[in-house]
Length: 232
Image 1 (cartoon, one colour):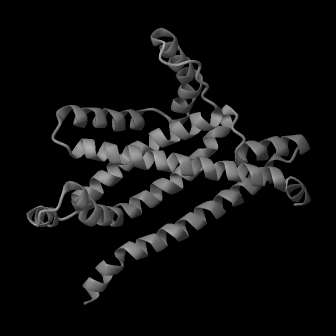
Image 2 (cartoon, helix red, strand yellow; image 1 turned 45 degrees about the vertical axis):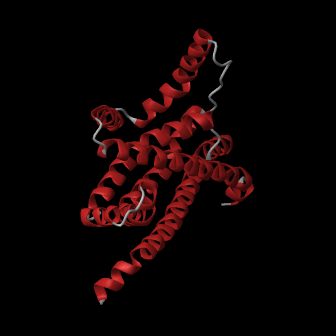
Image 3 (tube, helix red, strand yellow; image 1 turned 120 degrees about the vertical axis):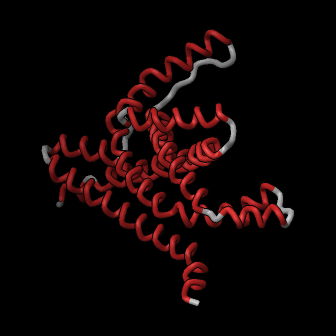
């Protein structure tokens, strides 16, 4: 394990990149999930069709293929459109941007189904009662829909987040210096790939364990009133 200690700086740097990538990706996925769930639950047929096509596309295409398409083809497409329209200049999609956009786009589809199911689980009578009390759409969302949606969505969200963290390992394929890339580079240089890959395994286990602990506490917080009322 002395060699791991010697390269601890590289592993720590790569771990920070992995965490940053996961956070940016999950924020994007939550935003896309909320938009997608709203579209699927709307009465607009076009919005429903677009959201349905989005989730169907994600289910049918491997994550790595989407990442490679965005990294190698997305930049060319954006720049070709800029040249054709004259609306923007040269745009560079670096590894971090390609990774976060792809992972966020992929898990946005899963978040769409998570949030849609959570919203449907809210008793309709509570929504009708809020409308009857004269609540605006924003107040209805903030006081009734959002708190309960979070409670119903958290178990599925926790699973999505844990899978998302593991999916960040894919970005090493396109050259982003995450923990997998750093470990592979260091391991190959000293011919101890197994040792460094085992260190990566431990790092991911720590990240997922801490995430599990934090999200379970969040579930307890949002379910406290429900448990008290059931106990009463």
